[in-house]
Image 1: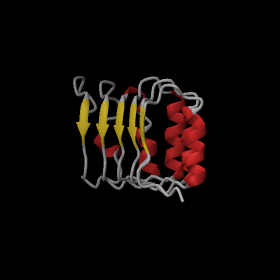
Image 2: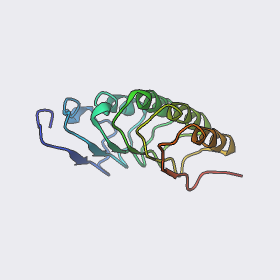
Image 3: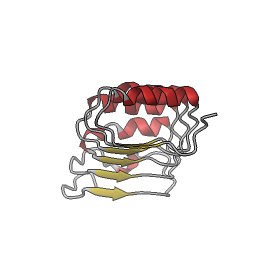
Length: 151
């Protein structure tokens, strides 16, 4: 896949990859949509994804094992990314600190229109961080927060 210059979408859902590095897709600049949900990918695996993050417009990372360190890496990349419009981080291990990281970067991001943080461990304080971000971000149009603890 590394040398493929036509692949624009790749679905690797439910393969229990844990790491994605052996797939050698990091040099594929044509890849726009990547779905790698339910693969038990941790913060370390999330770090590898950032090596080709700038070519993506859609990333489905649902049901993996990233926590605050992984979401912090994504947040830093989102701060500089000018292509990503949709990211699904639902059903991971993100808590209030992770919500704060992503909220801070989205105050300045001008491309992301859809964010899914459903079914994470975000509490009322995390929801407040997200609410504050919305005061500064006029680009985000779809925000999914189902299944978080607001009480």
